[in-house]
Length: 155
Image (cartoon, rainbow, N blue to C red; front, side, top):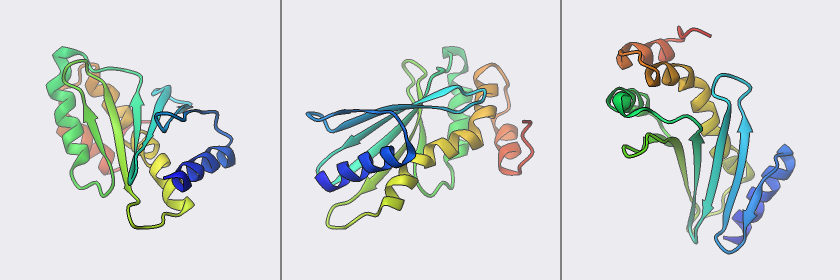
């Protein structure tokens, strides 16, 4: 566990990211500015004895009247993903992308650490613009996912 914690600290140092680390809880917290319509993403990394999770949280929340459309969009986005997934809190509309890294009985590399942290950002870059469209009233999740996956979404 300590080796993984150090690898995450090294990642943040190498990438020149500001972060906070809670020693007692083994939790890292940082933000990244997407320099686009998504604004800042909030990143929380929780390290446990044999695994860690990366939660990348969107600052915008889905409104109650759009929850079903947002859920459909996120389920369609999740289908076929190899690592990680979008999640939606039905109570408050919070959306996050989560990656999971199991390091029990194995060594992980700095590349695995880097990929596990950047992957959620890449997924927001890919699906985020159309996610915002569905959050603000567009009513065709299937079409919006097809646009993303066919490379036709509007920039």
